[in-house]
Image (cartoon, rainbow, N blue to C red; front, side, top):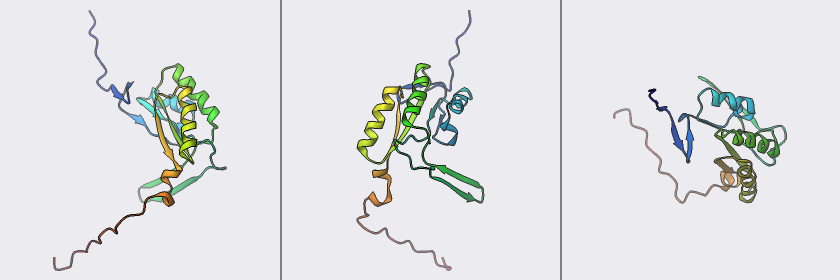
Amino acid sequence: MTAIVENPARATVLGMELSSPVVVGSGLLTDQERNIRRLLDGGGGAVITKTIHPNPPPGGDERIVRLPTGMLNSTTYSRKSVTEWCDVISRFADEKLPVIANLHADSPRELAELAERVVAAGSPALELGSRASTSPRNWPKPRTALPRTRKPSASG
């Protein structure tokens, strides 16, 4: 009789049974179907797509910041169309692979419409963002100023 050993690394996240608790975040590597497959094959329990936007700005919005320890690279949106992403997500859904769509839009209405399309394509979960809520000009104004902290004196 063969003993069945359960994978101790298995996890349930958002109702999804994952082979690993590692969820690979949205980034440059998650903009290509082949890379997403490699990340899943390499031990990722789920992968979040590069940010899907219905009308990404032309040329992308890439920012690179040099730090003493390395560099940070940010490319905000995928250059793929929503239709292309829905096709990719549908293929993953057919294979029951946990690929989560990262969505961003310029208004709550646009975000809801995008979410409907991606869920219909088979995304098991969504990561949502909206420019309306994340733009600094839309942030609420603080009601009171934060107190300033005093620097300790040289004498203690």
